[in-house]
Image: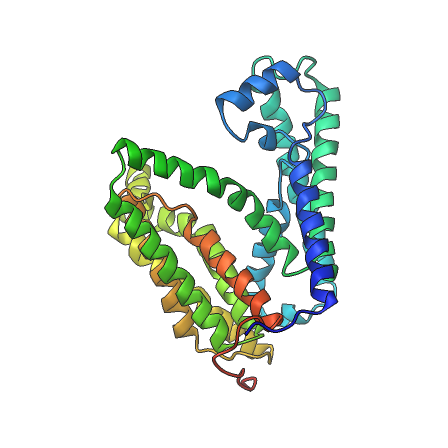
Length: 348
């Protein structure tokens, strides 16, 4: 029997829904100074053009990239976890990243023929200011969810665009299947991967209910891994092949070295998280091997399905893991699902 939910749950649910609706509406407000007819043509020819040229074009990525950078620093120097001003530093770094990205977007918009009727410094200033304001507003929306909503604002805003495209992605897969150009085996493989990946993450989360360490490790490990994997493979490939082309070959999906490196980095990051939390005398309820092996299996399986079997995954491995973490964490916090164990004592 499901537990009775109090008014606080529904109030937080309403706040979260309102924030996500506001975010989606902002994704359809174009940057000032764009030609309406050209923008409409772009939207018709390539789905999602309106969102990529909107007030919220930068999305949550400036803040998420800043958080990833902060997490890497925490892994290297666990004492950083105790810094009181760290959240302010992360926000400042996110705004700097947003400024750089906004400048790049403004310049790119001017390169599209007919999109900007009056290019120049005036358009760039207005565009950069608009995109910066949009990025700051998204950060504020994430904060509202954190304080008065359900779940993590950053993760929900990260997942919203992906989940919004999920129905159209599934419809496209169904259409390809009906036309006979996409095999049933690929659909079954994708479904099996999704179920097993979600089950693996849910098992980890339920084994350590309420553990911030487990949730953070599961969510950030894939993001950190893919942030450093390309650089690592490029350096390794360059050293062993002594050529840029050889390095690119090593980096490409389908290469055995890439699979080994992917699994190794995932396991290493999981271990670094456990060490970092222990050094900071924070709760580490699960052994890093359990998390690392589970996440490594998910990441490698996803790449094998996509590169070797040409399987289309409606959700990538990173988004799938984050979605499973966020959903399970909310269900556990509101006692909608039970836990497999009580969290262990903090390691000394």
